[in-house]
Image 1 (spheres, rainbow, N blue to C red):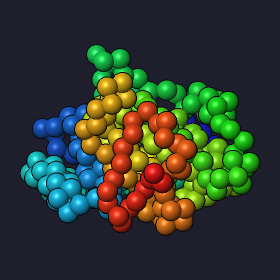
Image 2 (cartoon, rainbow, N blue to C red):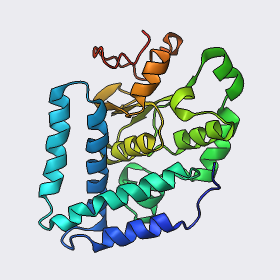
Image 3 (cartoon, one colour):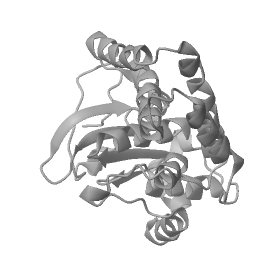
Amino acid sequence: MANPQHNNPFKTRFIEVLDSLDRYKDRDQHFRNFCTLSYCALAKQTACSQEEADSLEERYMSVVHSYKNKDDVRKMPELMTLTLTALQQGGCDFLGELATELEILDKQNGQFFTPYHVATMMSKILLPDIPQTIEQDGFFSASDPAAGAGCMLLSIADQVEAQGFDLSETLSVEAIELNRTTYHMLFVQLALRGIPAHVVNGNSLTQEIFEEAYTPISKYFVNTHGCLFKQHAKNRTIHTHTDNPQLNLFGF
């Protein structure tokens, strides 16, 4: 795992690209559009039906069509590459930190993101004996009912990798987030970090579910273990199931 990234050049370049886009849209809108485009492109890979895949494609194209200058759209892959590179180095909540710096959080509803060093400290305290758990069960699962952009889950992934384990085989995650844009950020970060995850746009208190998706690496995890979560993990905050036989993510 790399050291935490302070003032990293990926953030600087990301903001430079945002500022070079359509002047008729502000940073906030460009950032949200990037998150939507990235989410649709990644979530489509594990869509549970053709209807769901078509809906994601429609949303993707709706954002594309909102840009008169298609050169702006062609810059979005660079933002994806910057995000991917930063996340793969570990030690950061890249999109969450960017959202904080760009001041696009939903402050009226009390939204704020936990500093990464705080999440790291908390994850070290809360995590079980990782080697013992993995030796006993083959993998372990983490659940966050108010995941934000995924800071805590990303810090857990850092701890797993630091002990020499492959995330794609030893960690599965369920993450729930109410805010739609933050849900997109959450999914994109977990997907690009290579974490097998079921990500829910929903309300943990009311158990409402508005949308859900699986990160692409989840397919590999399921092929390895036969499920994404073990049967004894039924006490998750929101219980969701899928009838899709190709995924069969849950062991119950």
